[in-house]
Image (cartoon, rainbow over all chains, first blue to last red; front, side, top):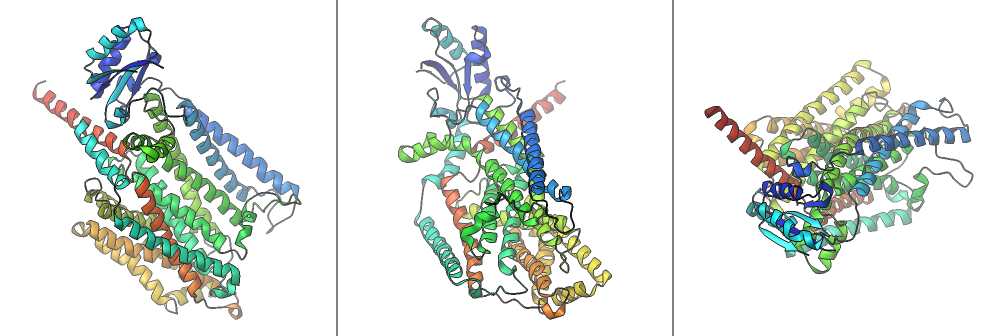
Length: 167
Length: 450
């Protein structure tokens, strides 16, 4: 894996570098940005913002609800013993179990989707710089062609990079 | 946030992880000793049977179920409060949330242990789980004890995930600041976190969804714990208001637990710069509100029972207010209502010390409240010939003490290995403060030079 990247002290400089790389012909997907904290206000943080997470959480909840409805009903009908003068399929108490498993389904679906879409867990990433957790913002390009490196470096330096690095 | 202040924040909050004094080891040994004594006492109880405890007919629940309800209540300190503050985007929550969420995870684990301690043969605890027996007979889903299993499992799973997910970026930070075995362990815990915009956005979206999901679950958990009582035709238990009464009591004791934990962390980890008096004042206001709410529920419950004048319920009411339980009852009223309201409603007294004093009282009072719900009612059921008394023996007292030590031990160990204040969230908070200042400056400048 090769990479050319620069570290920036503030999000405005990082945004200028991203703009410079885009002006050099790179797409959003080709530009890598890493930071030790989220910068919601910056345009570079807006990429990949669209997510199905809410819908997937709802789907997880729905699966939990269907499963728990089946489970409570099936178990009560499997041995139809009357308890406490309640009907065999007693919906009032069943609603408690259904509610809990619906919420559990939504929570688990959310976490699984987070892990899949954020590509976690994985081994220590090859392209990374520990300076990111010291407050620096990394902007770079992974596996650039040799011919494009000088242009990329110029674009990164134009953003006001504190350090320019190659890997 | 400037690099200098970012580095200072990181250094301050990583210091407890990287530097260890002899006091830490002394405290761990002390607490672990008490926990071991508690485990030994439990083993003694298992070997000799429940005859060594004070639990007997007709009061079978006594200390253990009191502790169960108490610890499940304490668990409401964390995830619920954290989720509400996160949803309303309260800026002051940032140093508080993780301190609170940890309490939830550990208190739930300890609370969930009590039904197992309360079993005559605890090695058969898996019979509590809803799975079919060899004859394919399932547990009765109409039983409140089965509801407890589902509620606690869901809440524990959700709370642990709610705690762990925002820890991943902080594990990455510790990974980058440590070497050797420690670096490798934190590297594994960081799960390969890089901090790309996509990862940040997914994490924040997931936290928002979980905050929305976890609030009704938290409310349901203590409501279902209250159903263990209110589904039974026992005097003073069979009440429609037990659900909200228990939830309010849980949040009340939870906030008190959180204030005490935060004050201890502030003092012993020297993080005064991050846990400000304003955090305690805000939590103190919440505690005051919950104290008033608790008083309202107690009044509503007692008035209804007294006015209804049912013989069995009046017997329980009398024994708690005028009889043998009266000292405990009035202590509860004083420490849950009189002292917190007196201290916290006066601004000058709503200091860190004032909040801690009120919180210590509330913890004692809320434990007494659960004891007074469990024991007098079971000892004074409908037929006077079956009335009984309960006197705790050293076995359950020791086990109870050891669970407090276990909570403290787990908390101390956690704050040793994980940043107890979310570092990345603090940085976001600083960023927002900075932006607000900038926005304010530009607004003022815009007004001056339109």
